Structures are given as C-alpha cells and as structure tokens.
Length: 525
Image 1 (spheres, rainbow, N blue to C red):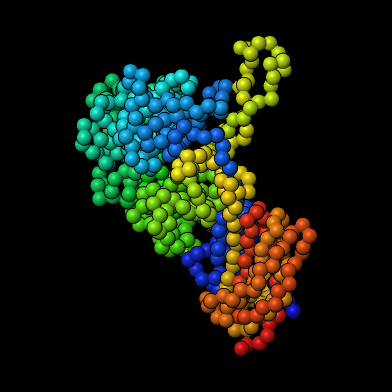
Image 2 (cartoon, helix red, strand yellow):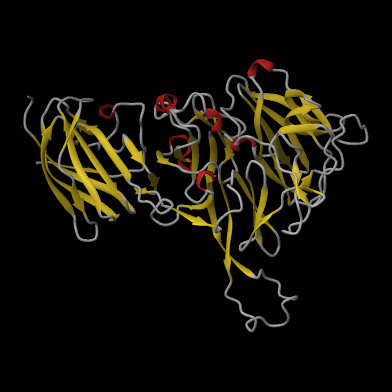
C-alpha cells in the first residue's frame, strides 16, 4: 500500500477556475478564511475592536503621525473626527462655532493623502479639507488657495505637487481632467492652482481618450504618477519647463474597475489594480494578470454587477498580501476578499476570506506608556519621547455598519464571533510518483484510504475525506474526525472511490504544512 505524501502546500494556492482533477496535487480547490504563508496554510487571524467607540460610523480613516504621537482621522458621510489614542474629537469644519456637515453619499467617495505631513481629506462633493495643525483643538477647513466652485473626485500627493483628478468647475464636469497645483514646501499647502498664471507651475490636462471612460483614481510609482481611467491607464512624468508634466498612455485597453481599486505593494515597486475582469500588476514597464486561469471566472460570476463600484483594494505588508474586497452577488457593500501573496510574483498563492469592513489601512496604534511622573529625569516639558507608547503598525478596518474600528489579524474571533477556516482539495487521482518526482495520476482505478498522516499545529482540526465515483462528480464524505496536533499524528478513515477529496477546517487557529495518504488501489472498476 503506497504512501502519497503531499508537501509544498503554499506553492500554488487555491484555484477556482479549473476542476480539481486537472490540478497538481499541491493545489487547493477551496481556501476560505485561510492564508498561504511560508511552506504551509493557516487560518487567518481574528478581528478585535480597537479605539473604543468612534464618534461616528467610520467610512474612511487615515493615520497621521506627529513627533509626539499618532492621530487617526476618520470620516462619516457628514463628519470628520480625530482620535488621539484616548479621546474621539469632532473636528468637522465650522462656521460661527457650528458644524457645517459634509454632503457625501457613499463610502467610496472618500479619499485622502498626506501632503508634506499635512493631512487632506476629500469626498469629491465638498472642497478638499485639510488639518492645518495636528491638534484636536484645530478644525478641518477648506484647502487654502483651492479654486472657488471647484471639486475633484480624487486628490493625491505627487512629490511637492498636489494632483486633482476628475474635476468639476462651477457645475461643469470634466471627467477626463488632471489638474495640478504649484509645488509646496513640506508642512505647507500649495500657494496656487491657477493654471492661467505664468509665474506658477500649475496646469491642467484633459486626457483625450474619452471612449476609455472617466478617471477613477491615481497613484505615484517610481517617480511617475499613474492615472487610472475605466478603460486605460496614463502615465504622468515630470519634465519641468513650461509644460511641467508629460502625459503618455501606459495601457490602452485595460483600466480600473472602480475608485479605491489600486494600491502599491509593500516594497513600493509595483501597482496592483482591479480591472474590469481581472487583477493586474505592473512595475511601470510590464503588466501581468494575477487571476487568469485561477480566479478570473470565479470572480466574474460572484461579484455583484450593480454594486461593484463599492469594491476596494488594500495592501497587507505584514503578510505580503494584496487584498481585493468586493460585494458578492446580491450584496451592496464588500463581503468577500481575494488575497494574493505578492512575494512570489504573479504565481503567488491566492486565497479568500469573508470581510465585515468597508475600508482598511495600516498605521501605528498607540497604547498607554509605562512612564510615571517619577521615572522621567528632568521636566516633562524637556522629555523628548511621546507620553504614550506606540504598539507595532497594524491593519485597521472601518467596520462602518457596526460603528467600530477593527484591528485585523488580531485574536481568534471576528468581532466577538467564531468563524471557520476551511481548506479543501477535491479531484485527487495520484497513486504514486515516478523516479524523476513526477506524479502518477490514475482516475481509472478505485482507491481506498485507511489512514491520513497530518503535519499541523494549532487546532484541534476537523478533518474529513471524500470520494467521487468519477472526476468532477459529486463527493461522498466520510464522517468528520477531530485531529489534535499536540497529541495526534494521524486519523483513521475507511473510504473508497476514484477521485479523492480531503478537507481541513476549524474555528480556531491552525496551520497545515503537509499530509500523507495511505492509499490502496482496488482495480479498474
């Protein structure tokens, strides 16, 4: 009775677009609430509430660091608040001491940037808002020198310039317009946006490919600024002189799915964006598909065709992942995420998980320090360090629907509720290996499994084995066995069929790095 040992469990990842019986043994057909990391597969971490109770339901958040502490600015559809590590303070713009509410209508409208250390928030409906001093005593205000009766869907920093995209002037929409400011020194905002002033390096440009749809977003990469339209991508390059910037088409036939659907890898070398039918990655020169022959068809069949504009993408630098979040069919806001491990390039493993937040970003989370009044030499005024203690950088999600901030990959529960990680493979037909290491696959023979050896940690893990009478056929599962990695080495199973399936699942943390099947063949019938 041969033993079939399968390792390298993170080498391929999950594949949804190809039937299991056509995949290598190391591939998976389902990896839900799981992550491929190192040489194994593990259940994702939980999500724990942080920052206490927000003053309003957060739709967008951005961390802002001063020399002494970190603030988190966050916005609802009508208000902007600041959290200083202890207190949530309303810093909404005011007139005569009264709040002047913002007039946005959707989460996807909010975007923000740090411009030379100055935080700027923008919703595309109201004038961009900036925080002139990093103090909760300071209210947000309309960006100084911003042109009157003008709004922009997106505002981004590009070096010493601010770049406005998809501009509206006095009620007239210019959806193909790129507008840039005069450069500003760190800690200040632009002195002018007047494109008619010859003494300033301001300007604006209408991108001519109107059939490629409107501008949705933009982001710098390697000294250039990339502008993402619905059906194309443009590159904006600094040339100086009279024209300041040069524009050329980077991609003519692929564009971005929605606002908030482009991000940069943790090493800063590549952009990843959701196109109309794929996830694409580029380094400013070449472009590659991430989902083709793996998740592309699956995504197209599962994303909601009416609410796809609410999708968003973010970078998880701690796990080397790009995470694309989208509303499943019948949902308004994102409920599912596809995670791609970018460390291994285009072939990096893909998994998926459920989400319950509408935005995510990484930043420093502050906690109380250990210093006391008597432990600091000199005076508090001369003390150079922050009075609070920063924890490590962490991913933070805006759980808008429950008015919470969630620390992602924290704990084992999702906001106080258990959730299950599921790892499944079907359509296994291996019966041995050749001398050169190539797998021997035979779907004509019946196979019987008596025992499964498992290399795992964490748990306990629920394991079951299944069989299909024909490749791609319905699976008959064995009863579930509980495997405790600390004490168990194997589970005993009695089941037979032509195509083997196996599943690992648990509502607690676990990691699987390999497994071995004791298989006996029973003839061709």
